[in-house]
Length: 315
Image (cartoon, rainbow, N blue to C red; front, side):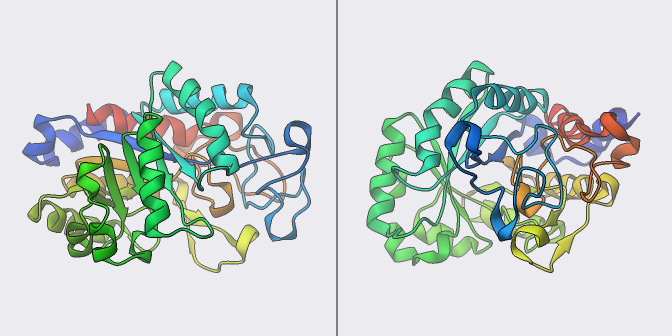
């Protein structure tokens, strides 16, 4: 019944431009987790003075436990999830040359492509990031076969600094994470995305995409199931999931904004509680129980299934 309702919604309200050309989807992915068994130490699971494996830096607990992103078995299962969600592109978090995320990018690309997925990167605000280092980063990423780059916190640099790179001549599509469309246009980006589902709620997406299209930019608004980073960072701002209603409302808003691409925050950012990766039911942790009427083991994949419903309707 839900799948039928979603399809009917899209047929009735999705603008003619998007209906004429299927809207693609991309999901933000984090290959930054480590554990002693695979890597000799913990990374990310221990944020906020937590002590894994049973006490982790998340209000949720992954169904796969506190895994390592270097575990190829885990990586294959994750890409199967993303493929099952019918997402087109994996956007792998990237923290500069020589970072753990850089070292793991070849495996992410190989496993993702075997699953029939495209791979992009999100260029993060690593220590020492400059406009010159970003220019070198983009050339390197293009050389290894990356064609879409999402630049997080693009406004760390001025539009004139970005313009000095001549992004449109670099052989890739660069998206700026910003709601300042005029800045992105002047800087030479191909498009904008929002990522932050708290700052950029559904009520802002139509305006941002309208402004982007008016100046010839692509618009890739971000949708997500909720946000809760209290366990990892103590951030008091929470966007509750409301049994899946938050996720669906953001999808509604993104599609009404006439997007060129829908981006999903996120597959597995456990510390911020934005993940759709399967979560276990454990005492002292939140779970997906109740999402879309599912409970127990059946609820673990609730957001994978719901994502598949929306992305299938896009086609």
